[in-house]
Picture 1 (spheres, one colour):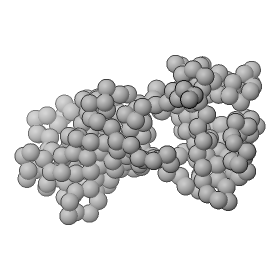
Picture 2 (picture 1 turned 90 degrees about the vertical axis):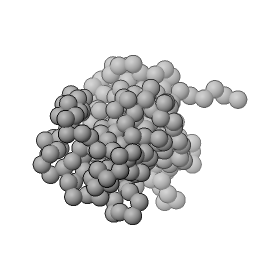
Picture 3 (picture 1 turned 60 degrees about the horizontal axis):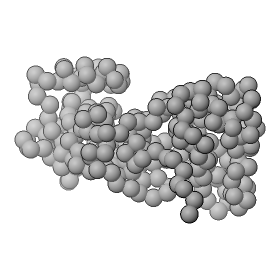
Length: 252
């Protein structure tokens, strides 16, 4: 049996998807889903969120000292105009708890240092700060669904390149069709027909999306060794494409 190529752990995938996701909703029993304009999964394993002041989540958190059961859903969208733009869904399940007034400013400041989202300015005005204390996490993508324990999630970190991934993929798709064509040579013959786009990239490899008449297919191309910095990542992509000295990709 061939050794399995290195890839992000499930916990790392959850961390990366949460860091990149722009869309999140909070679901509580018996209530309509609540939009979550600000969300930040902290290293300690809980999620700091901001929700509209009049949402059911605010009342539930204030009324139940132990917290109200809730599920936070993240949608990770590809940064390209694909036929099916959703790359992954993440569900974080736990208990919603209120943040004491005396602790809110300290918590907002701590979040802003690591996640300077403009929506933090609305907290205390149009939105309310809450915490989701986790007890489980699940991520689902084209390969299926996997769960991860909270302890593993606490120890994991997002992929080091996830903050730059969108710009790289857009650049590769818009300006380097020749490189994408070279990468496509690694695909099985049955997948080489259709529109091929770069779908995802991380320190372990690159994933292509093939849009064909029989549906969408994702195919992962692992790097020979994990990339530790931007220069190594660009070199890994060029090597996969068979053009290690291609000047046009030195910036990715």
